[in-house]
Length: 167
Image 1 (tube, rainbow, N blue to C red):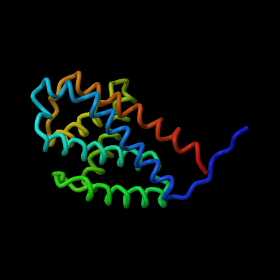
Image 2 (cartoon, rainbow, N blue to C red; image 1 turned 90 degrees about the vertical axis):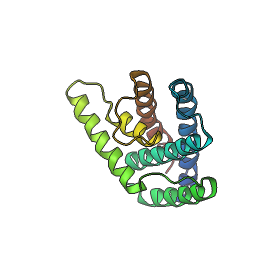
Image 3 (cartoon, rainbow, N blue to C red; image 1 turned 180 degrees about the horizontal axis):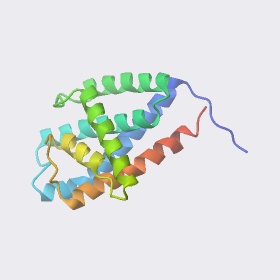
C-alpha cells in the first residue's frame, strides 16, 4: 500500500500554483469560443486580463478549500504575486482582498441556494464579473453561466483530491 508523500509547504504551493494554471487554462479554453461569439475576448488586453483574473479566481478557490493550511497558502500567495508581476502588466480593477470578499460572499449565496433546492449561480456571476471586467453585470447568458458554474464546482473536489495525496 502506498502512503502519502511528505512535502514542504513550498512544494505543496508549487503544485497548487500549477493546478491553478491548469484550471485557468481549462476555463479559458472552454469559454473562449462562447465569449468570442458574443464579441468578447477579441483583444489581446482582454485575453491577458481574463487570464490574470482566472488565476486569481482559482487562487481564491484553493484558499477557500484549504483555509486551514496557513503555511501552504502563504507560500502560494507569495508565488502567485511573483508570477503575476513577471507575466502581466494589466492590473485588475479590484484588489485581491476585494475579489476574495466577493467570491466568498457568492459561495455563501450558492450554499443558501442549494439549501433551497435552487441552482447555485452566485459564484459563476461573481467570477464572470471579474473575468470580463463587468462589475455588477448578471446577464451573461445561460450557456456561459452554466459553463463557469460547472467548471468551478468541479475544481473544489479536485483541490481536495490533490491535497489528500500529501502529508
